Length: 144
Figure (spheres, rainbow, N blue to C red):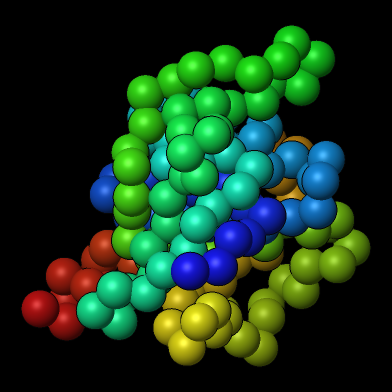
């Protein structure tokens, strides 16, 4: 098991691992996704394991179900104990994001995963996550 400085939510049954520096907007993006129907897995830190070839994310026991709302404090929310990660979202400043990236995957613990870089503070940030999740879901259905 490794511990990553990341936040994880479940969007339409797909675990979204949101990575970024402290203060980069991980909790803010997660909160907006939760407001749109996502479920919290873990905020701020995730315990990562590999099970049957899948990257799994869960919350350390001390922070399970807790989410930081900057300017207010920590709130308790319903949460999922463990979730298979299906998308990595790295938070970046707008000028750091390629319009058409040469790669859209990343490897964590030998697991290849779809990868998206976004500016979490743009109005379209949650919509981008939802569209990528829908695209991944459609691809998976076509391959079955």
